Length: 595
Image (cartoon, rainbow, N blue to C red):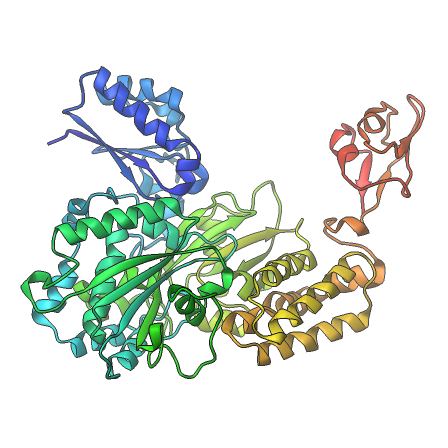
């Protein structure tokens, strides 16, 4: 029995910040001090507060060390682990109601969270099945196999109100019932871990921090629909997640929790991994299945839907990682427990990946119905550097921008759709007043054009034409007629594209046109970018009464566009200026402005 447990984040974010070397240094120092029988080092998944990584928590004290460096380790081991004196300079420093925060759960970042899908992330060693079992792991599978019929399992999931967390929000229990009703010699359970939205890392973090919860939930789904085979389609760019899934599958086999006659019953179920090459379109369910089959990942027309003819033309269900991460808790705690959280039509919690112009980037899980203001200001710490919140993009390339006027909207499936956005898988990118909304629409269209599989003309050609019009506008050559043409083309693509990804591709354009039309008009009529982002519309100039004639701007200009004598106001030649901004960064007197 160890007297101290040191939990160190081993998720992708902290690993990129050297947490692997921190763990090695810890183990070396602990051994050097003869503490290896008293102190255990545990590599966990993501704690969520990525902005402060690498994170280390020492239990039983719960001391929360943030932004730890390798050179800090000797002091932590000597002072805290050996002498029992907390190293206060490395603690997460924040005050609430005048009291210093010392424990992770006391931080404002966690105060309004309710961790269901993320319940084990940052808590257990994801590479140790015994730790998962100690947290009631595989109890739900045992319960369904020994005391519930497949119909009862599906009824429980239906009653919970769980909707798919991959973006569409389709009722999970209903999807399972469709597949269960089909007669076939083989059925399949698939997990979508492709997660292609820019800025999204929810599913990756669950797989890295709690892989067994997905395996257990897939086995439960297999029992419910009558399947013996599951496939997890995961991005090859997620090496930590892939490795931990492989370890988890092997461990589950060793313990008899995957394979034949699970828990001594006649139920058998196995799981295989399939690595995706990073194509965004393979997040669409039929394209994903086509890819698993070994073919080019392209969507298929629906109907027939996958529940009737899916993988290898057999009845198939597909849910994403976060959806599966809720299943075991629903089985153990009951449908009433789950649907007591959230809103009338959106039950439970939702995981969001907070990014962009926000103080605390990271992973959060909140009840459905939590407002955007609560997520951004109270959990995320607000917009930094004194800037104002302008908008938040939800749903990635398939979603839309939520403006400041809807800052208090309760976030759930229906509310987001009503204001022209969508839940998506859970990426939430915050933008401040320095963001150009026309440029944001262009960014997502560039992504969609690159990632279109090309199978259908509305998506392949339509998104390309949209992008050309946005490029025309951001270069100062747009017309008011272009705005009307874009809107018409957006609706044409939505109505005629083959798959959900193509149908939702125009959403960033439509939402920015609706809420930020004045910015489009400024680009077209005034030939100006109000946020000062679109390079071709920028003009740098010198404010004469502020210029001291120090020549710093002229010396840093790479093209010699700035002229002037020492101690006299300088001038910028607009015909030579390449708008790199180097002069503005170098000027100490605020004499150079852009507009």
